[in-house]
Amino acid sequence: MDYKDSNSIIKRLNEIKDIPTLPIIAMEINRMLESYDTSIEKLSTAIEKDQAIASKVLRLVNSSFFGVRSKVTRIRDAVVLLGFDSVRNIVLSVSLVKAFSGALSQNGFDIADFWRHSINVAMTSKKLSELSKTEEPECCFTSGLLHDSGKIILSQHFSGLFESIMMKVLSENISFTASEKTLTSFGHEKAGGFLSAKWKLPVHLVDVVRFHHTISQRASNMNLVKIVHAADVIAHALTLDQDLFDQDAFNKIRSRMNETVLNDKALGPHLKKVGYWYPELSENIKEANRFFAQNA
Ligand SMILES: [Fe+2]
Ligand SMILES: [Fe+2]
Image (cartoon, rainbow, N blue to C red; front, side):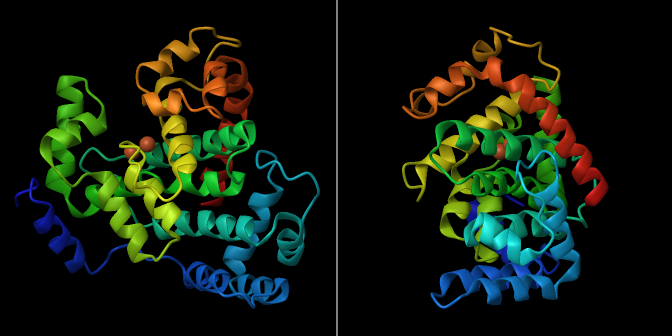
């Protein structure tokens, strides 16, 4: 197969029968939030119909790292407290984990590493949204979890390509994205964008997947794309055991970060201080990793 030819990859993608599917409840909620007559009651009842998802949503909302102050025991209370959009994003986050639960570690792809990285980016995106006050935190969290979903598609359904990318990463000591670029014009951004569009996710989420490396001006929500890009760079550049108040932390992320993101008025000042807020966040990330390992 010619991986340089996007059309033949798209053709193959359309033919895959066992492509991951979102739980019905997530699709239903996306539809409900597009209509104007959705009430708190209607939304809560719909979520509660899927007991497994509902209890995971409550567990996540009440987890220590998620940052909701009061204890929430009913979905209805979560909707009142957090709002429709936040709850939609939390349902989506829980659903994503379920949708990818069948993915296997193969061809140089490690599913545990994938989740650790995704959770790291989700938590860091949420933190950046709280610091910069530009986007809704739960939306940033979901975006972070979703951003590399194309890697799952490539590793499970384009195994030859994925293996070649990983071999080049190791032999040339380059990033996944740099290696991918030399082998295909249809990388994980596009593969994940394809899946997100197939799932009929809101366009700002589809775009964050499509453009988290390229930072294209075509994205429907540039702030969101910038946040996830920054969080991704931080997740790759810093370790969770970073020394407290490490002055070099900013230097470590600077060289890999897109200029527009570095110079962004809302984000830039917080990125410069990453060494100051990252140690505390990394403790929360470790806790989030433990949570997802136990609740996935
Ligand atoms: Fe990526
Ligand atoms: Fe990533």
